[in-house]
Image (cartoon, rainbow, N blue to C red; front, side):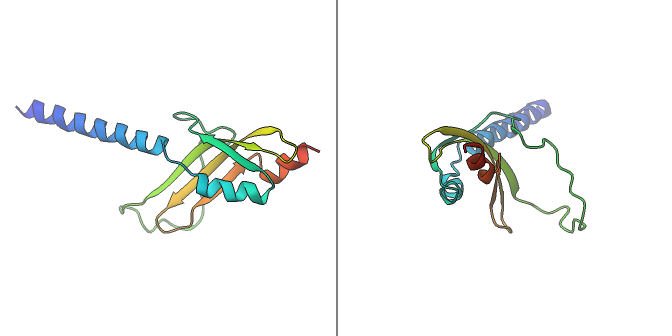
Length: 125
């Protein structure tokens, strides 16, 4: 009987992990990406989920050295998402840019592009 409960708990945890992955995969960050593209003179076309464990030109692992972590043991809702963004440049050519979106409860959401937006425009001239 106890094996059944252990199996049931494992199935429930697996199901909620899968559900969380599906939810995060379908998130749309257009409201964060589009204004920055427009500042650089580009038009947003689409963004898509690149796939599990695909980070594009960004580093797979980042080690931060600095201030001590005072919130160990607490719930931290900080996540990093990656998207392949397709944009239209001024000269009507499509360009693919990778976006790294960092979200959190207690900090402002940030978007980092690779290649950087100013370098995309320079490459076209």
